[in-house]
Length: 426
Image (cartoon, rainbow, N blue to C red):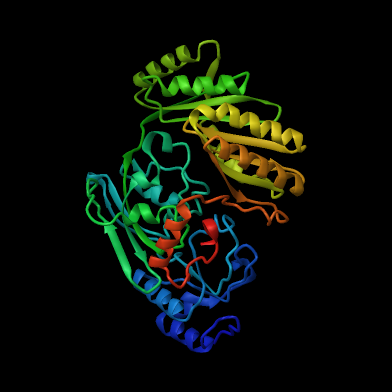
């Protein structure tokens, strides 16, 4: 059996219990590559079904083990390092599409299914989950829900909380709890789907989800317009948002020594798109635009893949404050002699990266967080250079922390799941 000296409460007995529950191929020693933010777990389990996962959670919870849920592992570096890590519970084997009710535009899918695999299956019926998260080839349904990751399609189709209509979650005590259903208008019962979305795996382990779907567009066209200033970029974003245009995505890209660029995506029929393009060019007025490759919508992914010495942060500002925020990032980066790059959606949600000396990055991030906070915005650090551990990724939780702690105590009173990783050290 496995040697696990850091596990409390009779480790050999616990390992025997897990080994009795799971097939041999579903349990193994943790390797160095399984470490989470430098914290080394002892065991990795990959349950073959929801019942096994829930039972493994109960065993771990009863034994006071710390459990780290894991999907594709693409966002394990986000948040605080765990206070402790004994057991990784992987959803890798829960990768099945349970039911695609294509006539009802819904799909039920297990949490370990990757976004790319799901989209490929849905595309066979001309449908999609209208979502564009980071690393779709590896990111799983459970992982994107836990981290609430979405991209440019959010402008047209809403956030994850708008797309999910049902969920099943394994709670630390071994309960499998479900809420919602595959009927799009079902609103009965406790809203577990929205509660678990963005909870960072601290309340339960998502095992399956049900989503509303949208048709795949038959035709698409992207236009890009170079703007001379941040103010001009924001002005164009606002004019488009206030217009009757039926655009799908709208973003601004900016970087040091590069003019800001506004990208817009239209979906529909060729005739409808042509009319939309003509209207956009009228709105753009003196700002010339040209057809662009759809690869511009991968800019967020390219930013997230920036070199290892870069810090990557997510920010939220009011749409009217986009130009001010871009200017703040530019000025702060220049003051600290840092490189920078930023992508923001028209809603004021965006990502930026800072590259250079870690001490200067720390100072710049603190300065930017303070300014965003004064302007009713926020800054969350997603990825940090190795020697930037002192910077709090979440910032001040404000008045919501009391409620969040109450929810944590209700769902996970022993702090079994992802201990210390979330906002306020939850």
